[in-house]
Length: 465
Image (cartoon, rainbow, N blue to C red; front, top):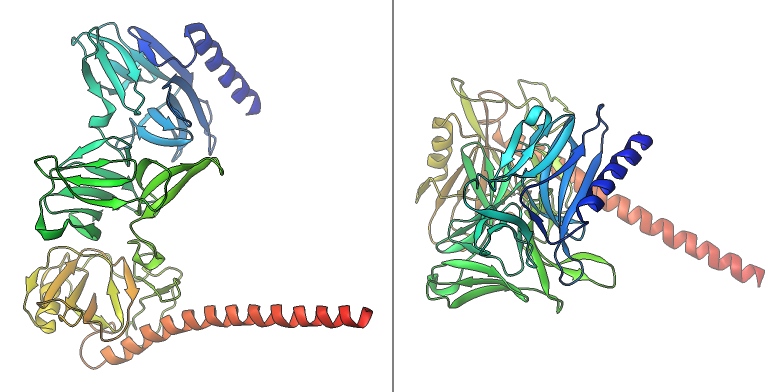
């Protein structure tokens, strides 16, 4: 494998030096090709940098990449800021290939990614538009231009999970990132009255963070400036901003695919890497997927499981969602109410000014609903609201009396409903309390061990003296 990597990189270097290494543009016609390994190698990444923009350190570079993903090799064109990938042609749909990964700017101006047997896996569809070259701008925008430098295609029109400094997003534009080991994905969206983060799962869409301009002012576009994310109206007047918490200039904003958190990033010259100067969510339990399905994020930032009694047997499971039904359509159900629990996920309320019982019935009558949240208005809200959910995620422990009642749908007779709800509530709270108690015990035990060890060491030192 090491020999193959050496030959792979040697072939890339020979090709690049023969055509001029890392210029700021690529003329038409041009072709760059990387060999794809014959056997699958976990963690393999092959990359050829094609262009570099002359600007502040770290600089932007465009690269052709081959990466091992899910048992196959993906071929993509990307833009990097230092070591951070800020744009990728395969962000939404990957192009898997074998034998070779080739980038070709054709004579008629179409930019294509090709695999074995001339298979085209991605293209800009700019043929016949007079494209002369592929160019990487100082702002990180990858563009195809004609002889008069008019842009015929640009990567800025196809945002992925990163917004770069100086980049503008109009109303309706969004960033997306895909959650690990989940069918869900995150999105950052610009709406007329707010910017917001969403967890998307099938036909369900739930927000978990939002920022609104004051006085209900409408947003037309946003721009990432040196000092923060700025929001503008239709008169190009700044109406709100999210400020950076550092003096260093911002370089990009990113929607993290691991957590779904939104961050503003600057480059630390001292540490030689990018660091956050602002995060939308600062605690673990505010993240939408902090725990697995049917998990509760506790006050100690640990995860406990929502467990219910099935028949008369308490079933211990290896994962929180093991044993929970995958569908409720055509089944008899009831709602299990959890005390001291809420969720970070929100959407438009299904109904307002309804009772808790009516909210419970709304979820039971919808076979695709798996949970409901009832807000009684005690937490400062003016109205009582009922929210329905298509997934049990983002659940966290809250103070009692917060005005929220979280209910999970379960098969009838498995622990919820009349007569047994109280026992189930106690069981859930005991599980949460046990987790918190163990963590506190471990912390106190470690602290006590440290104090005793230090005292013994001091006594030994005194005896020696």
